[in-house]
Image (cartoon, rainbow, N blue to C red; front, top):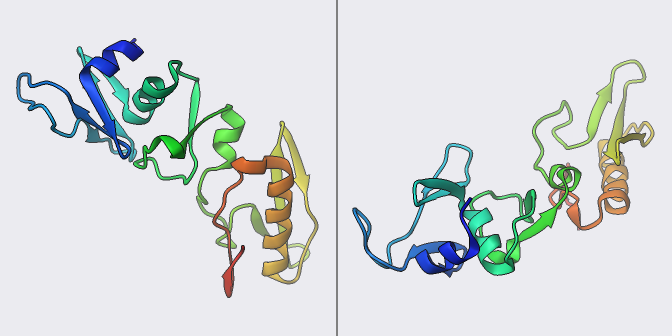
Length: 167
């Protein structure tokens, strides 16, 4: 496990990035540390140990390392400290970007039996069915309102209506 002091000794933090404080084999002082992993996260190596940059930055700033760290904007490469927050496993999932559904919107699916849009959301190991709607925008708004109540600041912030964006 890499410690806070090891990170502070090796790296300088600036604008969401880590830079080497010293030169060593193949690395110059002031050089950007880390490389983008296929997952989109930036990964660093120190003393033959690997760590994601967002975890290193959080540890450097706060002195502890929570089990889960949420990227507020959902971008795994945006490691600015103001974009990182401690989260539970559930909270971290609530803020994940849309990954695909028939509607094109997170939490809204097409109910074939009733020929209506059906939003649903989960929180605290419970599923909430939010009704059935003829209009897709109404279903999206029902999901967004429930997300605000159930997920608070961890809700996904970028749901779009068919003809514009939610505020």
